[in-house]
Length: 511
Image (cartoon, rainbow, N blue to C red; front, side, top):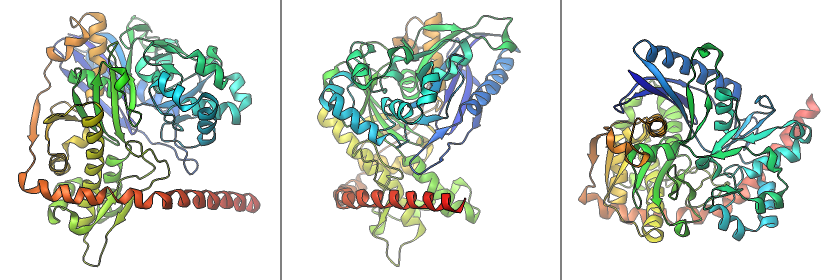
């Protein structure tokens, strides 16, 4: 049987699977990898390590598929965003730098002054933040490593690197280029006005392509007997929107390390500066993401620090919060573990417990984590209701974190919405396979591809009427918490930076 192989690279692991012509996903393989934190506020990836894992998983799935059929195409989904700096052979000159990275603050402020925030939003439909919109990281590399910058043939993101490894071509699809801070998302082209103003050489930028385009043929030496087309694919959340068949004025939730509410619109004039805005896979549609950075990571952190050392399996997460009650007995939690995107956009914000007292239990603190993450999602949903005029009684939820039933129950109560947990959580893999399937003829069109496959709702979480009023009141208190601490976060960031600089100086003296 014929299959398409989909590669999905998230921020903590890599999934590779294969989809047949019926839209059935199988042969799934997974391998984790680690982010690198070389300095405070720096977040990197080892590109060759990731490629090695991708290559091994790809070959493993390939051989499984060939045991009973053929591979018709390969397609790619990656997290967004990152910066890679490649020589003419496609080899990295420096580690990949992630969207979580904060080293390019000075460059971000400089770009805002030189280009102007109004023009930036007019062209890119986004605000400019260090790391997240990668022109800032590009300029940091140019400023701090000029000798390597001269050697750099192409700058891009993780997909640029992986697609070059597969085909020898340097490209970036338009769902990814939307987050570079230099791309005109309405006219689907690099903005000469911006890249000229900031001094970026156009020749160092990759070609931007349609996610559905065939960008080359697989050149892995182990597979030289075949000529398999490689489709560009798209950013992970764009792939997920494709897998779910999200239409205009529809919304879904994705839950992993981040927690995101995504809206699809055909009106770019409505895109909100507080959200991450990009071209959809389908042309003349745009996706607007209300993205919280670390809800899933906050839950993982709590488990790793306070539950795992006691010998608990993750099953404890389904039971612990039941030992507390709505409102967590007065304990509140801000889920800003390393800064936050929507809705506050504050890189200095941090995670905080407030209201701890002598009767506070571990269950209260864990429930406060779930509730704090849910309150943040409600803030995002309120923006969607007012700015996009979209009020829905229910929405689909995907991703590993969607399977946390107690968290889903709390979100349903906090938002007063029904949440439909979908059967297939690997929507990055599935979505990129659908993109390729439409490109090579598995499906009649990309718009209808999701309707031709099965992705059932495995269960629906309904809001509980008895808890709605309680959460309405607690939410009002939560909304006062960040504004009360905003100046503290800014002061703390300054002092932490001074301490880090002093430690580095002291270490130099010791050496």
